Structure formats: structure tokens, C-alpha cells
Image (cartoon, rainbow, N blue to C red; front, side):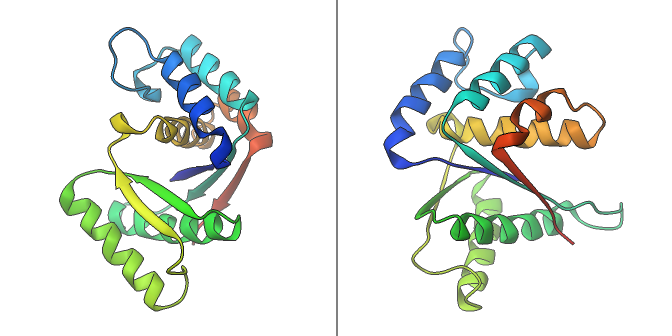
Length: 166
């Protein structure tokens, strides 16, 4: 799971840059739909933008549920984003049911004072928020790096913190 930290004064410029990277009538920029040449262009473009990436990774055996891994990563990501000084977090919406699971986790984290109530957290479909496309590219480059393809991670690594979650 990944997040990108972007100063609010740069939001519009970065949105426009990411929208300009879309091809044709594609409603969004999505890493897995791109060719290697376009992935390189996306990574190179992100490396030049005023962003910082945070990636949380939970490596688990086949006996673990992916939703449990997601919860562990989301907990750590929200903690790291808060420590980085962010005031607002936008999470990519998956489905109403899955978003509700995330909200339940957030409520628990707030009750346990792991995440402050002052951190505003919302869910949006990636099609409506281009800044989410940057996080998609960052997490994709990282998972490819874990799988032995470091090219795109290497382009972005100076902008990222990668954290392994137990």
C-alpha cells in the first residue's frame, strides 16, 4: 500500500501533469495498463514532481488473508502520513463494503489514539482524483522491485520510504 505526500500548493499542478499522461480516452492513469515505455515515462515524471512516497509492505504466507495484510499496511501508512504532518488523506475507494472495513479500522485506530481525530480521511474513486494515480505508480514500482524488477523503483527511490510491516 502506498501514499504520496503532496503540499496543497502543488495539488493542481500535479493533477494536470498526471492528467496529461493519460492516453486517449482512458479515464485514469493505471500502472498495470501501461507499456514498459510508458511506465518509465510515468516514473520519470513522478521523480521530477514535488512529492514524497510512503510504501508499506506486509509479506505474508498463503495462510493469511489479504484483507488482514491490507489492514496492517493501512494502519502503518496512516501513522506514517500523520507523522509526516499531513492534515488530509484520500484513500482510493474499492467498494462500499470494503470502504466500510477501512472506516471500521480507522475508527478503532482513533479510539486507540494511534491515529488522531484531526487527520481528515476520505475515500474517492481513482477516476475522480488524479493524485491517487501517483500512489498507484509508487506502489506498483515497489511491488515490481520486490519481484526482482528494480528499474522503476530505482527511478523513484530517492522520493520514497519503504516500510516492512510485521
